[in-house]
Length: 281
Image (cartoon, rainbow, N blue to C red; front, side):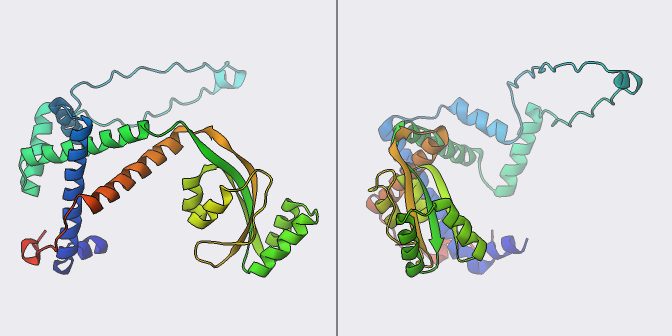
């Protein structure tokens, strides 16, 4: 509640106004890009999303009971049958009349017209469709690495670890030693794209790692804030299939990159006039 009160305080009005302006700019950029790509949202799709937002489903799916395997009856079960489990409560279906009542109440509360609300829903659907198309454009394969690393607080300690590894000491034994005496730690990353490595370890480390072959070890590398040094061993480096979660993430990153670039090149920003921003929510 305190957080909401701070957001809605008069002194926060200009900041909230800037957020609203950014949202309007994003919606307009999305509309223009969708028009360029031929992406449209039929009005019946807007209507369905509007209805579902208020709990009304004009074409509810018929629930299909799932078959359950019968447990063999034992002597104990025959004497003391298990109680019938209490079913979970289900939401009461909303009628069309109730949907319309809820919609009108909401429009009165937010002081908006139904046309405005539909335009917001249309903008959200266009954004979803644009993101979906960008996900579909993501390649199905990508250069990926699998790695593990030791992490210590100084470059000297990291250099000592490299000397010991090159002398034939076992990586996992060194990791156990570091964790036992508290002088360092170890970790590993399963098959990851360069973007994933950048996100977790930083762009500089990702650049080094993706220039290494399987079996190679890095020199001591500082982490993103320079507080620790890593000794990285690449366990595998090859082009591999991307799983669906990775493709979704890359598609989202592509959308964000496009949005930032469009905001820089296509938008002429001006300072928001404080007199245009209401101080009462």
